[in-house]
Length: 426
Image 1: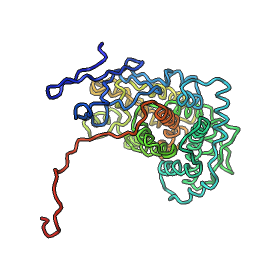
Image 2 (image 1 turned 90 degrees about the vertical axis):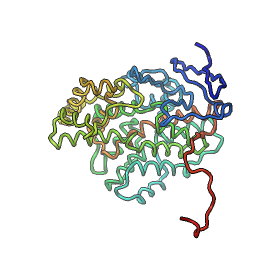
Image 3 (image 1 turned 120 degrees about the vertical axis):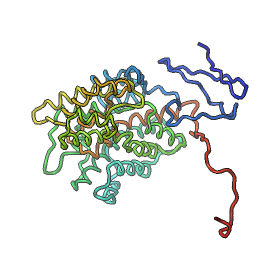
Image 4 (image 1 turned 135 degrees about the horizontal axis):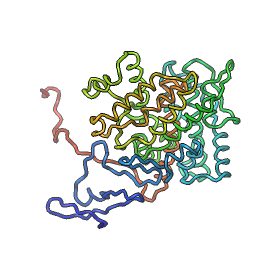
């Protein structure tokens, strides 16, 4: 294959470099397109635009493949922990025992937020959405933990630990404030996920009893969400980070982007749909037919990248089976979800359009089984995605071609016109 592509514009031929990734992904480099030709490209939604080179995550949507730093997501979900996966995503390699211990200790030591920040929670309305609180509190961390413009390696590592730990602490505190209970501080005796669940559900009058199956389910959820290439929130993080904004503002911008129901809020909408089917008494087959006629919305199917079964959904489906088979954990919404999937996977309408279950279809059921409130679903997504945001930020800021992001546009407004005095305006 040639290493250039030829572009013919207005009778002139231009050679454009071809970039090939390690998995044989191909791109046409148009960095000099406007400079050389006066043209820009149009790509609504940026679905065909490679905005960067990255070694963090590989996705093959046609084959249903997802790998972090080369490791299949199936292996990480089965064998790794969230802290170990976070280290891998951020630093590029699985840690040795001494590295993992040092990283874990740093996370523990960084898990508290400044005590004065706890007063901020009193300023939010009782019914404030946890994502609104999280984005605000993360941004405010910069005033309590200011970082110099020129970061040393140790300072950068400390900022990484601060955010991975403190996002979890702020999330649990925001929930406690929403239900009027005193905050529970992180404990050095508990691991990452156990710590979060304890901060969420224990109180001065009630100890929280850890269920290993719940811990495993939440841990797997976080691992699966640790990164996912250049999605909306990750691209936002890179865009904001390109201005050299402080890292707390950068991660806060990712939280804000994730909040949207087209992105991180989709799993909550799946639960709402399943409960609607349950409460209405509708048969899943009837609901699917209405969805095909656009009278209903079938949430949790299809993905912008995956044109095969989302590999994360396969993992979560198995965990749902095991978790909801436990005594007292039965959920009719899971039975409805299974029936919806069985119907859709035999229907040419879905198969021809590559509409397979995505990660949101089963992730909400797992969080629901873990007693996570619905408006905290996206918060859990943000906790899981924080290592990925930090990895992408580090990779970008250390790259040789690091530059301020500045997309172009095609202007469609009025042509030049001139100011009219009020009396002359019609």
